Image (cartoon, rainbow, N blue to C red; front, side, top):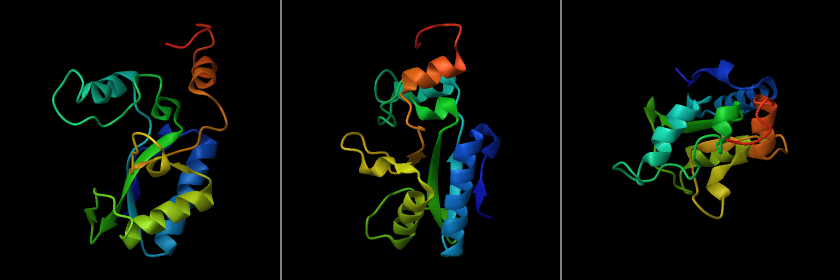
Length: 146
């Protein structure tokens, strides 16, 4: 079954865009698995350590509080082929092409277009903010970013 895991972790305006994106993909016959929405700073720290201080390939360029996942503004997702996740991006794969196209239609930024450290599974909506502004919005008492 296609799904969005933990949609409640997304802020309402981003959740609406993700749901529109997801519905658009389904309407075109592409099932998507949204496997990550909101991520804690501790979870981000573990991911950021990969390929740096722990074994494995680098999976993110964002340390804690520098990822839009901490602000409920990002998802990680892959298309499903016969119920199986398609983890490897290919421009020739029609499933990925639909996902990217529908993300554009929904107003989501696809990290597969980034100039450095492309993240093909990542879509986000920053709302025009910087991460510093998002952090202050979430933690106004600090007056600074973590």
